[in-house]
Length: 285
Image (cartoon, rainbow, N blue to C red):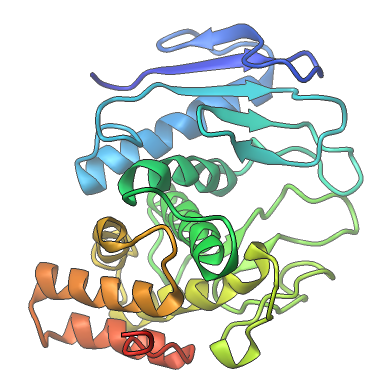
């Protein structure tokens, strides 16, 4: 079907989708948030098509609709199961969400997970943390792809530029989860299973699989979208709604074997990355 986008204005109300501002193929509009949402959805679509030969998040050309100016001072962006929604931020904690391609791609990846994982991923416990981690992974890789960056050139930050003055630099770091000098004062992410936060929020424990992906990318070198991202992508179909970190380790190991050969250096690198963060793929078997 090809790329199909629409950007709507909620007028700082809670209505969805709102008033259409820009449709597919339309010219740029005066509202820069509308253009950023439009461009970010397009870059994410182009990435899925170019890297995975996938036609939109559902593989069948699904429209990528976005609504901006949702409610007043709304401090979030989210995928609601049907479309993208962006608040404006309150100007203190957050100054807007459409300015970062990794944030846009992160939220659209929740839509990808909805279609690519049979039954989706439950939004609690380790499956919920995996949901957030996979969104961070592809958010970061889409940004790197759009900038043509190698794994060594990438900053591996999520949300760099959306936080208010003096609040912090970014939301999360895949390179060093929990390093508040890189992110913000509330970053409580662990990067190994030994530091797993029991009953922790999904955005907290996602640091563990995030760091496994980062470790794999650094071991493989080059571009994250060449080998590491396809491994993660093809692993999605092997997951179940209640998948654990160990399940993801097994799925990515199987994915690497299918793509690059059982016992290959790439598969061994995947196994080593999970071992680095303390996840045993044999657990729960």
